[in-house]
Length: 291
Image (cartoon, rainbow, N blue to C red; front, top):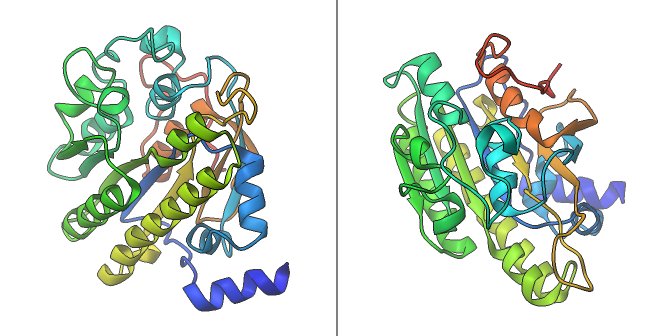
């Protein structure tokens, strides 16, 4: 296993250690991938680009403790740090607009000023992560510098996300969120860990490699923090995500807490960019994962 991992790192390269003052952050959601499925693929060397994070990075066990595990509720929590009672997003059939100012995009724009940070949403689901009025991320859509929210496969999302990196990474500080739906779609159709889902996950890994290439081309790999996580897992038999609350997050930085809550992700991003979240309103019932 160690030899295999070292070969992967030699062939595909490592994600370099990030400077203490990062240039930007990229948060990537691999929608609907169970922790055991992901770990099996990492152990067999089937995800070379994600594996490159782990040479100097951290694998964090993430739990859902206060909401139903699905795409809408999961991403609302990942991108706000708040519970459904605060965001109004309980599940895919019970949701509303997240209140003004509560998303990580709005927090960062407020903290730095719109001229001092670029923010972008590249999402592969129109309803769950779209920015039309009535959808959860409506207010976020009004402040981000770029958003893409069309039903798209991994190849297209990876292309759009990498172009966003080329553009915003050349301008200054940035925060980019990218979402891949392919594994979740395969999970609904075939179940967790099915050959079809494995293929979809590998395609997502390849698309993530396009994002890494953009960072390398710009020469900012060592100035960019990467977080890859999921909103929920998947069951094999019933082909749904009921009870799938034991999740994961991977980063290219060492020293993170080994365990955390899904609501901890937004405070982690804020802290890593030097934004204090202790006095924010509403207050966070969460803790940054980076000590």
